[in-house]
Length: 441
Image 1 (cartoon, rainbow, N blue to C red):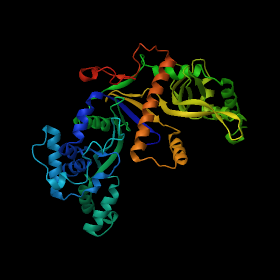
Image 2: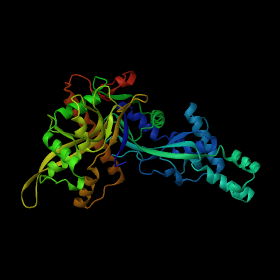
Image 3: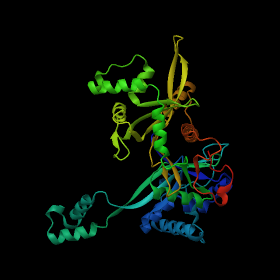
Image 4: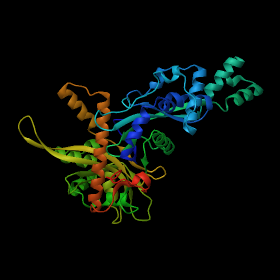
């Protein structure tokens, strides 16, 4: 987190916050939902399992050591709780231990807002990553010679003993739960993992709403890219830089005196100002289609993209990276005014912007490119380091802001009026999801 990544977004019924808070105070339920329990289930039953840790303690489960009989008891308890509600009490020495979060406070990242966060931990059985080393170990211990020097029968015995060698692979991702906005953010593209997280949140009382980016047409991502390119400013400057790139090496190209313009033509191949004042730049990696029936061509450099787009009249952008910027005027130390461009957010725009199988809208290649610098600048100015909850809360706030900025910008580009539903919208509205404003932009 706090850097470039891929985020799945789902909707959330805001009114389900009370049930969620009650679940977080339920010690038996939290023990069964914990990574401490999930690790025991995976280890003893050889089954994939998902558990949670509080956001401020990503390895909290390691704070509590359990004997074999305690692991077995916790695993049985967790499975019973998930199936039909645990009917037996968990032993006090297990339930009262330090290995899991047991209060709403341990998951809340803002004192006044219903913002929560957690680590979702997947425990999956995988084949051992280095079977040869396992075979070598067994050969040394059982037969006192390297695997290569084993007789055929001994080698076959070792092979049979290691063919099913497995290990538990632990993967954990941050999850941000915002009942104020009606959103859940999960840093993952793994459909199985996302689905397991949504099931866990539902078990904890959060009512989930499947959502998707939707702007009324099947090819709206390409439409946005190409409309931005058609309206680009600095077209002559982009073409000049592309021509220079054909004739000179990158370190031989003369840089422009205008630092703002140099930053634009060196990083992007399109830059467009929207009516609302936000600028949107297009950069690589990109895929360009020369005509409707041609396979897209991958390109990384801005100059290469500009060149490809000039080859045919029907050339168009299939996918690319979008950077949203704001322009401000600052006063330098010598009193002069200078324009600066500040990146707001970045994402990859392509036709994989939705994971419809799990009802999630995606932010792929997402980055709040200046977030780290802004935080460090604030620390330097105030001489105060934010607390862990403040770090997480600031990131959630910026995620929400970026999603709204993008949704609004896409609406402007496609000229969709405010009366039409567009943006991150529910895939279907049934039951509690019908609550007005639950997941709309």
